[in-house]
Image 1: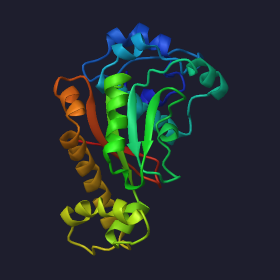
Image 2: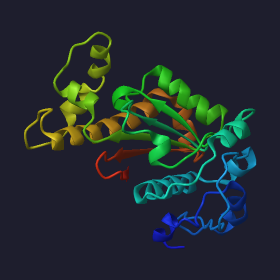
Image 3: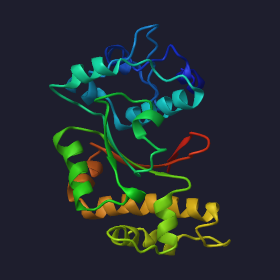
Length: 246
């Protein structure tokens, strides 16, 4: 199946249909799941989730973002999804992103209720509480992907660049300062230069991933044996594109 077809309205991520076709995934992990007019349901079972690889889950994220960008998200009955997941959940991933109101992970990746765990902190910096949440998601609940998502024009990044002092925000922004200091950039290094802001945001994603691996032996060990994948991404507020970082 060609990547461009993933945005076709026929390619809905129906979990039951997914199970039928998962065995014919291509070598690059793209899964064919054309299911006609059948709607996607948010009642992913443990068995269905466990059959998916981390690469297949990331591919579904890419496909969902393409649907979002093309203006063709899945039709959803949110109350039906809420009732279907009320007694149990088997999310495939945990997405850790910024609190920015313009970057809701479920919408820009086109996921429904019960599909993913969602953690949000200004500037997507991971403290021990966030790490514990990630460990729960992966070690206890069985998620297979940890996706750290930064975004363009991030206010927390701007605040860190300007060394803003404000209550508890001061300590939070201090955790982003290493990204400001280590970002290689030859132009104007100020919060008014959005190119620099975005460069720092990218560095911050990389440092957050490094911090996850360093501070969480649980996640590091899961990744080392191939049970999970820790990945980074950047969301562009203007284009709607989620860029997955190598």
